[in-house]
Length: 319
Image (cartoon, rainbow, N blue to C red; front, side, top):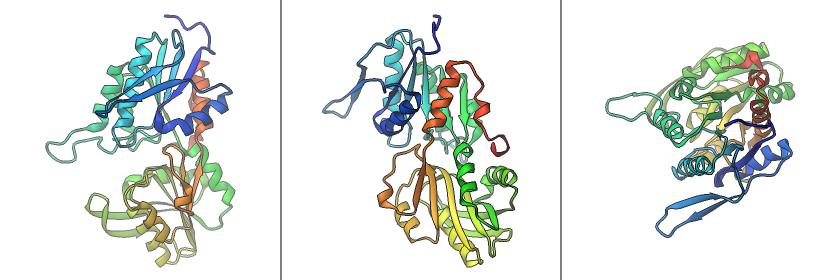
């Protein structure tokens, strides 16, 4: 099937990402597509398009954070679009859930990230657009194109706007050193690393700082904040070591469990994350949200016009 025009596309949203899809559509200067969701008494649900998608490149915006209904909803939207003769279907997944289950870290466990990739592909997705995957190699779980965007596009300008003196970029764990190192290199400032050991999931037993933070304004970089245990412990430890201030800039605000309490009670000056997952800032005054809507809108336009996505990156800050 031939796509007759770069303007032949429509954007739809799952129920949990409407807030972001609306901002993407405003940036695109076009309306958000109409889709109907119906839930049955037994808990099942169905979706149906309220307008034609025949011959259209369909972009479906839905972050797949738990619960699993968000993923199932996306799969149903994909299937419905294929059966309605859409030209192609792109899954726009700002936050790719299940990404932390990207390998077998102990015997007899599932690799959920690979399973999700398989389900999306089998459902009929032609392309995936996502941001700051927990592990970049997840792109290789797909046999279709993956546009992997970087939060540095919005985070670097914000960090620069703070005009912090004696700035230091920090990673809350060894695994994030590459990410923090790219920001450190681009901003031409020192980097420190926290080395942690976990007692169990979401519980940090011990932490040490590698590098100097005394008198420094520290910005912790990570791909997400879940319960906030690691970030808050790192911030408090750095303040104990004489840091002038500690902020955290993370891509995805999962904010589960007692995260709000942890952040509010921590020494963090500010917690910055994107709007890939909905969050009410009234619950946590320290939170500042930066929108990635324009970045995704630009990516959609570039895909329609067959232009490179890499021009969006702040190249030196790629991670």
